[in-house]
Amino acid sequence: MSFIIRLATLSFFFLVFILFSITLYTLIWLLKNIDESWSGWFNINRSLMINANKILYKTRIQFSIVLSVVATLLIVGWITYFYIRNEYRRQQQDFIKEKVRKVQQSYEKLILTTGLPAPTDKAINDFNQFADINAAYLNLFDTDGVLLFTSTPKMYDLGIISRRMASKAFLYLNKLQGSDYINPSERINNFTYSSAYAPIRDAQNQTIAYIGMPYYSNEADYQSRIGVFINTLINIYALVFVAIGILAVFLANQITSPLTFIQDSIKKTKWGQKNQPIVWSRHDEIGSLIKEYNKMIAALEESAVKLARSERESAWREMAKQVAHEIKNPLTPLKLGVQLLEKSWKENDPNFQKKFERFSKSFIEQIDSLSTIASEFSNFAKMPDTKLEKLHLLPIIGQARDVFRNTEDVEIYILNNTDTDVVVLGDKDQVLRTFNNLFKNAIEAAHVDAVCIIKVSISNNQDRVFIEVEDNGKGIDASLQDKIFVPNFTTKSSGTGLGLAFVKQAVENAGGTVEFKSFGEVGTTFYLSFPLS
Image (cartoon, rainbow, N blue to C red; front, side, top):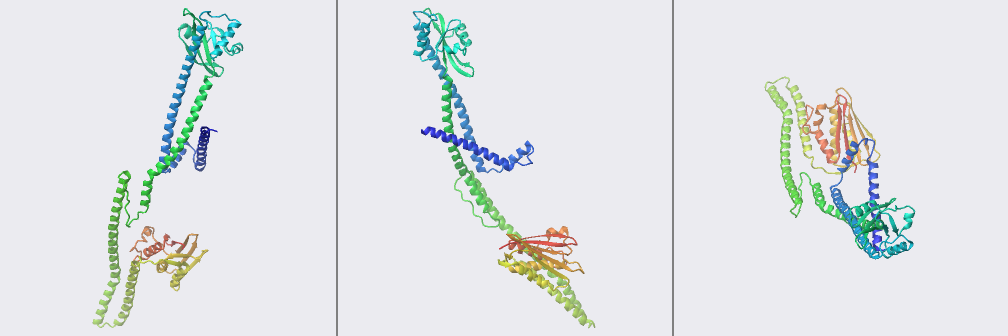
């Protein structure tokens, strides 16, 4: 088997494989994406557009390159095919025309002295020998277009071909006095072939007959040559298609590699941190884009520094105002009490002892309030010093419950629905204070003269632990629910408003989340989740 035949076979199987792969991919895609909602052309078109928008830029480049080259090859191949076909037809007609002229001249020389022979057996035999010498099928017609001699008598005897000359050829040669005529489309049923006709002249240059030369092998020869050409073209195109596919992948990767590089660099960009600029040595469009990106991250870093400084200053200003306000509240009654006690002392008030005892008790309560305020602000200020360690969560919740177990009219229930030892990564002090704050807030939100019931439900999945802290208190007003985690916000007449802000920050420091739902006069439920360690 020659190399060309092997190459043709390989190209054929390659094209079949490509067409089969495209068909299979299309069917799989349709099965995955067609559903009952595809009830019309609009929905089909909409779905196709949505899926087209998901195609990668790299794939678009590859497809565009391959499609452009394939379209170019098809156009060039189509033009080449028509040019080769027409050129071969022209060459074939030139060959037939040259052949019939040689036959015409030879036959004119043959009958130059004897004239046109009568249709005898000897004349028929001589005509057949003449056809064999010229290696052609020949027909001789008289001046009326009626058949005189033929080298293929059976076709005429059986009525396959008419015994009269083709009408177009007769009109052209007899009426228009043409020198020769080529008819490219004579037919025998579905078989098409070419025929050439030329006049036979005597010594006086008078037309005495017409010779016809049917060329039966022209169509088979044409199909053979065109088949070889198409086969060669397909082989070349198959190899070019493979080469273009590889080149498209290479070019697409080369074009999109800077974009991938920029994408990876942008992913590493962090707000509030020092970001390294992208280094690009070329002064092209990508270089301009990277230059603008480097300017942007420099401006972002400068803005982040200014914003952080502004936030810190604003936070300290708010904190200072809150501390001053919270300290001022207990100091005012203390000042009035001292002034009243001093006046009673100077006036020798007989009730001085009772007033002193009452003021002493109030004085201690106000000092405790100041101590609580100082502790809460101190705890909130220490939040950044987080020491993460593996913690067994259930004992910590139990420890927080023990703090409030002996409080009057308070009942705390812990429902453990976990199926594993719950271990999380967090700061033990912060997690303990988180549940202390939640229990304390639930107790403070309880209805007067009602038992405060707190239910703690614990469950887990493979990755996280979920805790629900539910109370039966007064709930949180809907208009205030979006502010309860804001520092300094409180709905109580006394307090700093830092308890739930502390809870949120402590839970997030441990990688967890905190949410809540609250209904007026029904109660509030806090939902906490932590990743399992």
